[in-house]
Image (cartoon, rainbow, N blue to C red; front, side, top):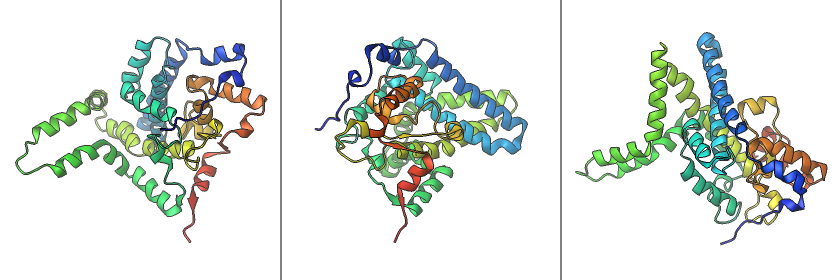
Length: 309
Protein backbone atom coordinates (compact mmCIF):
# COMPACT_ATOMS: atom_id res chain seq x y z
CA UNK A 1 0.00 0.00 0.00
CA UNK A 2 1.86 3.05 -1.30
CA UNK A 3 1.49 6.30 0.65
CA UNK A 4 1.84 9.59 -1.23
CA UNK A 5 5.11 11.46 -0.73
CA UNK A 6 4.99 14.47 1.58
CA UNK A 7 6.73 17.83 1.70
CA UNK A 8 8.07 19.55 4.79
CA UNK A 9 7.06 23.17 5.40
CA UNK A 10 10.61 23.77 6.66
CA UNK A 11 11.85 23.29 3.10
CA UNK A 12 9.78 26.24 1.88
CA UNK A 13 9.08 28.63 4.76
CA UNK A 14 10.78 30.07 7.78
CA UNK A 15 9.18 29.42 11.17
CA UNK A 16 7.99 33.05 11.21
CA UNK A 17 6.31 32.62 7.83
CA UNK A 18 4.77 29.23 8.58
CA UNK A 19 3.10 29.99 11.92
CA UNK A 20 0.58 32.56 10.62
CA UNK A 21 -0.20 30.41 7.56
CA UNK A 22 -1.53 27.58 9.72
CA UNK A 23 -3.10 29.73 12.45
CA UNK A 24 -6.81 29.06 13.01
CA UNK A 25 -9.13 32.06 13.08
CA UNK A 26 -12.15 32.35 15.35
CA UNK A 27 -13.97 34.52 12.81
CA UNK A 28 -12.65 34.15 9.24
CA UNK A 29 -14.15 30.73 8.59
CA UNK A 30 -17.48 31.75 10.10
CA UNK A 31 -17.39 34.95 8.06
CA UNK A 32 -16.94 32.95 4.86
CA UNK A 33 -19.89 30.72 5.78
CA UNK A 34 -21.94 33.85 6.45
CA UNK A 35 -20.80 35.36 3.16
CA UNK A 36 -21.84 32.21 1.33
CA UNK A 37 -25.38 32.36 2.73
CA UNK A 38 -25.62 36.11 2.08
CA UNK A 39 -24.73 35.55 -1.58
CA UNK A 40 -27.33 32.78 -1.82
CA UNK A 41 -29.89 35.10 -0.23
CA UNK A 42 -28.99 38.01 -2.51
CA UNK A 43 -29.17 35.85 -5.64
CA UNK A 44 -32.55 34.52 -4.50
CA UNK A 45 -33.85 38.06 -3.93
CA UNK A 46 -32.54 39.09 -7.35
CA UNK A 47 -34.42 36.23 -9.00
CA UNK A 48 -37.62 37.02 -7.13
CA UNK A 49 -37.54 40.72 -8.00
CA UNK A 50 -36.31 40.31 -11.59
CA UNK A 51 -37.44 36.88 -12.90
CA UNK A 52 -35.39 37.39 -16.06
CA UNK A 53 -32.28 36.90 -13.90
CA UNK A 54 -33.32 33.46 -12.62
CA UNK A 55 -30.82 31.58 -14.87
CA UNK A 56 -28.00 33.74 -13.47
CA UNK A 57 -29.34 33.24 -9.94
CA UNK A 58 -29.28 29.46 -10.45
CA UNK A 59 -25.62 29.67 -11.47
CA UNK A 60 -24.65 31.90 -8.56
CA UNK A 61 -26.51 29.78 -6.01
CA UNK A 62 -25.15 26.53 -7.43
CA UNK A 63 -21.61 27.88 -7.15
CA UNK A 64 -22.22 28.92 -3.52
CA UNK A 65 -23.66 25.50 -2.76
CA UNK A 66 -20.28 24.25 -3.92
CA UNK A 67 -18.81 26.97 -1.69
CA UNK A 68 -20.54 25.43 1.32
CA UNK A 69 -18.94 22.14 0.36
CA UNK A 70 -15.52 23.80 0.13
CA UNK A 71 -15.92 25.30 3.60
CA UNK A 72 -17.08 21.94 4.93
CA UNK A 73 -13.91 20.52 3.38
CA UNK A 74 -11.89 23.02 5.42
CA UNK A 75 -13.79 21.88 8.49
CA UNK A 76 -12.87 18.28 7.69
CA UNK A 77 -9.25 19.39 8.07
CA UNK A 78 -10.09 21.16 11.32
CA UNK A 79 -9.30 24.51 9.69
CA UNK A 80 -12.66 26.31 9.77
CA UNK A 81 -12.55 27.23 13.47
CA UNK A 82 -10.06 26.64 16.32
CA UNK A 83 -12.74 25.10 18.55
CA UNK A 84 -13.35 21.53 17.26
CA UNK A 85 -16.96 21.60 18.43
CA UNK A 86 -17.73 24.86 16.64
CA UNK A 87 -15.76 23.66 13.62
CA UNK A 88 -17.78 20.46 13.24
CA UNK A 89 -21.17 21.93 14.18
CA UNK A 90 -20.75 24.70 11.60
CA UNK A 91 -19.90 22.17 8.92
CA UNK A 92 -22.68 19.81 9.96
CA UNK A 93 -25.52 22.33 9.94
CA UNK A 94 -24.48 25.62 8.34
CA UNK A 95 -22.60 23.88 5.53
CA UNK A 96 -25.36 21.22 5.50
CA UNK A 97 -23.07 18.23 5.15
CA UNK A 98 -21.97 15.36 7.37
CA UNK A 99 -18.42 16.28 8.32
CA UNK A 100 -17.16 13.16 10.08
CA UNK A 101 -18.04 10.71 7.33
CA UNK A 102 -16.49 13.04 4.78
CA UNK A 103 -13.38 13.50 6.95
CA UNK A 104 -12.79 9.76 7.18
CA UNK A 105 -13.04 9.44 3.42
CA UNK A 106 -11.18 12.59 2.45
CA UNK A 107 -8.11 12.06 4.62
CA UNK A 108 -7.57 8.77 2.80
CA UNK A 109 -7.47 10.78 -0.41
CA UNK A 110 -4.68 12.92 1.02
CA UNK A 111 -2.78 9.97 2.41
CA UNK A 112 -2.80 8.13 -0.91
CA UNK A 113 -3.09 11.07 -3.34
CA UNK A 114 -2.79 9.80 -6.94
CA UNK A 115 -1.58 6.42 -5.67
CA UNK A 116 -3.34 3.12 -6.27
CA UNK A 117 -5.28 3.32 -2.99
CA UNK A 118 -6.55 6.87 -3.52
CA UNK A 119 -10.39 6.64 -3.20
CA UNK A 120 -10.70 9.65 -5.53
CA UNK A 121 -8.55 8.13 -8.26
CA UNK A 122 -11.69 7.03 -10.08
CA UNK A 123 -12.51 10.71 -10.69
CA UNK A 124 -9.32 11.37 -12.66
CA UNK A 125 -8.52 7.94 -14.12
CA UNK A 126 -10.87 8.10 -17.15
CA UNK A 127 -9.17 11.13 -18.71
CA UNK A 128 -8.53 12.09 -21.43
CA UNK A 129 -11.97 11.53 -22.94
CA UNK A 130 -13.60 12.53 -26.20
CA UNK A 131 -15.35 15.85 -26.52
CA UNK A 132 -18.59 14.00 -27.19
CA UNK A 133 -18.20 12.12 -23.89
CA UNK A 134 -17.58 15.37 -22.02
CA UNK A 135 -20.66 16.97 -23.54
CA UNK A 136 -22.76 13.96 -22.55
CA UNK A 137 -21.57 14.38 -18.96
CA UNK A 138 -22.41 18.09 -19.10
CA UNK A 139 -25.88 17.27 -20.41
CA UNK A 140 -26.47 14.77 -17.59
CA UNK A 141 -25.35 17.35 -15.05
CA UNK A 142 -27.50 20.18 -16.36
CA UNK A 143 -30.62 18.03 -16.75
CA UNK A 144 -30.46 16.73 -13.17
CA UNK A 145 -29.63 13.13 -14.08
CA UNK A 146 -26.32 13.15 -12.18
CA UNK A 147 -28.01 14.56 -9.07
CA UNK A 148 -30.84 12.03 -9.19
CA UNK A 149 -28.41 9.13 -9.49
CA UNK A 150 -26.31 10.40 -6.58
CA UNK A 151 -29.28 11.16 -4.36
CA UNK A 152 -31.59 8.25 -5.13
CA UNK A 153 -29.39 5.69 -6.88
CA UNK A 154 -28.95 3.64 -3.70
CA UNK A 155 -32.70 3.57 -3.04
CA UNK A 156 -33.49 2.76 -6.67
CA UNK A 157 -31.00 -0.11 -6.61
CA UNK A 158 -32.52 -1.54 -3.40
CA UNK A 159 -36.04 -1.29 -4.80
CA UNK A 160 -34.99 -2.92 -8.05
CA UNK A 161 -33.32 -5.81 -6.22
CA UNK A 162 -36.15 -6.22 -3.72
CA UNK A 163 -37.41 -9.76 -3.71
CA UNK A 164 -41.08 -10.59 -4.07
CA UNK A 165 -42.78 -10.31 -0.71
CA UNK A 166 -39.89 -8.42 0.91
CA UNK A 167 -41.34 -5.61 3.05
CA UNK A 168 -40.95 -2.13 1.61
CA UNK A 169 -41.14 -0.16 4.87
CA UNK A 170 -37.68 -1.12 6.26
CA UNK A 171 -36.05 -0.06 2.99
CA UNK A 172 -37.81 3.33 3.06
CA UNK A 173 -37.09 3.78 6.78
CA UNK A 174 -33.38 3.09 6.26
CA UNK A 175 -33.20 5.56 3.40
CA UNK A 176 -35.08 8.18 5.43
CA UNK A 177 -32.52 7.84 8.24
CA UNK A 178 -29.67 8.11 5.76
CA UNK A 179 -31.18 11.19 4.16
CA UNK A 180 -32.37 12.78 7.42
CA UNK A 181 -30.15 15.87 7.21
CA UNK A 182 -31.16 16.48 3.60
CA UNK A 183 -34.83 16.11 4.51
CA UNK A 184 -34.52 18.51 7.46
CA UNK A 185 -32.66 21.19 5.49
CA UNK A 186 -35.01 21.01 2.54
CA UNK A 187 -38.06 20.87 4.79
CA UNK A 188 -36.95 24.10 6.48
CA UNK A 189 -36.31 25.67 3.07
CA UNK A 190 -39.75 24.67 1.77
CA UNK A 191 -41.41 26.02 4.90
CA UNK A 192 -39.47 29.28 4.72
CA UNK A 193 -40.32 29.95 1.09
CA UNK A 194 -43.97 29.00 1.67
CA UNK A 195 -44.34 31.35 4.64
CA UNK A 196 -42.74 34.12 2.56
CA UNK A 197 -45.39 33.58 -0.09
CA UNK A 198 -43.20 31.83 -2.66
CA UNK A 199 -44.00 28.10 -2.35
CA UNK A 200 -42.20 27.43 -5.66
CA UNK A 201 -39.10 29.28 -4.44
CA UNK A 202 -37.48 26.17 -2.94
CA UNK A 203 -37.48 24.45 -6.30
CA UNK A 204 -36.12 27.41 -8.28
CA UNK A 205 -33.62 28.76 -5.77
CA UNK A 206 -32.36 25.68 -3.96
CA UNK A 207 -33.19 22.36 -5.60
CA UNK A 208 -32.70 23.47 -9.22
CA UNK A 209 -29.24 24.97 -8.60
CA UNK A 210 -28.22 21.91 -6.58
CA UNK A 211 -29.45 19.47 -9.21
CA UNK A 212 -27.92 21.30 -12.18
CA UNK A 213 -25.23 23.97 -11.92
CA UNK A 214 -23.74 22.58 -8.70
CA UNK A 215 -23.29 19.22 -10.40
CA UNK A 216 -21.55 20.77 -13.38
CA UNK A 217 -19.14 22.98 -11.45
CA UNK A 218 -18.35 20.11 -9.08
CA UNK A 219 -17.40 18.02 -12.12
CA UNK A 220 -15.27 20.86 -13.51
CA UNK A 221 -13.59 21.25 -10.13
CA UNK A 222 -12.79 17.53 -9.95
CA UNK A 223 -11.39 17.52 -13.48
CA UNK A 224 -9.23 20.58 -12.82
CA UNK A 225 -7.84 19.21 -9.57
CA UNK A 226 -6.57 15.79 -10.65
CA UNK A 227 -7.36 14.86 -14.26
CA UNK A 228 -4.24 14.00 -16.29
CA UNK A 229 -2.15 13.99 -13.12
CA UNK A 230 -0.02 10.86 -13.34
CA UNK A 231 -1.02 7.81 -11.31
CA UNK A 232 1.64 6.89 -8.74
CA UNK A 233 3.19 10.32 -9.23
CA UNK A 234 6.28 10.44 -6.96
CA UNK A 235 6.60 14.24 -6.90
CA UNK A 236 4.43 15.77 -4.11
CA UNK A 237 4.46 19.07 -5.99
CA UNK A 238 2.51 17.41 -8.79
CA UNK A 239 -0.18 15.40 -6.96
CA UNK A 240 -2.82 18.05 -7.72
CA UNK A 241 -3.32 21.01 -10.03
CA UNK A 242 -3.68 24.68 -9.22
CA UNK A 243 -5.82 26.52 -11.77
CA UNK A 244 -5.82 30.26 -12.20
CA UNK A 245 -9.30 31.68 -11.77
CA UNK A 246 -10.49 35.09 -12.92
CA UNK A 247 -13.27 37.03 -11.23
CA UNK A 248 -16.06 35.35 -13.20
CA UNK A 249 -14.62 31.88 -12.55
CA UNK A 250 -14.34 32.62 -8.84
CA UNK A 251 -17.97 33.74 -8.81
CA UNK A 252 -19.47 30.92 -10.85
CA UNK A 253 -17.06 27.96 -10.73
CA UNK A 254 -14.35 28.16 -8.06
CA UNK A 255 -15.33 30.01 -4.88
CA UNK A 256 -13.31 30.31 -1.67
CA UNK A 257 -9.85 29.61 -3.09
CA UNK A 258 -10.65 26.06 -4.18
CA UNK A 259 -8.52 26.57 -7.29
CA UNK A 260 -5.32 26.51 -5.15
CA UNK A 261 -5.45 22.74 -5.00
CA UNK A 262 -1.76 21.93 -5.42
CA UNK A 263 -0.95 24.18 -2.47
CA UNK A 264 -3.69 22.48 -0.48
CA UNK A 265 -2.24 19.04 -1.09
CA UNK A 266 1.23 20.21 -0.21
CA UNK A 267 0.04 21.84 3.05
CA UNK A 268 -3.40 20.42 3.82
CA UNK A 269 -3.77 22.07 7.24
CA UNK A 270 -3.52 25.62 5.88
CA UNK A 271 -6.98 27.31 5.96
CA UNK A 272 -8.32 28.08 2.51
CA UNK A 273 -8.09 31.84 2.95
CA UNK A 274 -4.31 31.57 3.41
CA UNK A 275 -3.67 29.56 0.24
CA UNK A 276 -3.15 32.66 -1.97
CA UNK A 277 -0.47 33.80 0.49
CA UNK A 278 1.16 30.37 0.31
CA UNK A 279 1.16 30.70 -3.47
CA UNK A 280 2.85 34.12 -3.34
CA UNK A 281 5.58 32.89 -1.02
CA UNK A 282 6.22 29.84 -3.20
CA UNK A 283 6.30 32.01 -6.33
CA UNK A 284 8.80 34.31 -4.63
CA UNK A 285 11.23 31.40 -4.37
CA UNK A 286 10.51 30.00 -7.84
CA UNK A 287 8.76 26.90 -6.52
CA UNK A 288 5.54 27.36 -8.51
CA UNK A 289 7.39 26.59 -11.75
CA UNK A 290 7.80 23.02 -10.49
CA UNK A 291 4.16 22.63 -9.46
CA UNK A 292 1.27 21.25 -11.51
CA UNK A 293 -0.76 24.18 -12.81
CA UNK A 294 -3.07 25.49 -15.53
CA UNK A 295 -3.81 29.02 -16.79
CA UNK A 296 -7.59 28.60 -16.54
CA UNK A 297 -10.49 26.18 -16.39
CA UNK A 298 -11.12 26.30 -20.13
CA UNK A 299 -7.53 25.26 -20.80
CA UNK A 300 -7.96 22.27 -18.49
CA UNK A 301 -11.15 21.17 -20.25
CA UNK A 302 -9.40 21.51 -23.60
CA UNK A 303 -6.45 19.45 -22.34
CA UNK A 304 -8.59 16.57 -21.05
CA UNK A 305 -10.60 16.15 -24.24
CA UNK A 306 -9.56 14.67 -27.55
CA UNK A 307 -11.19 14.68 -30.97
CA UNK A 308 -12.30 11.17 -31.83
CA UNK A 309 -10.42 10.03 -34.92
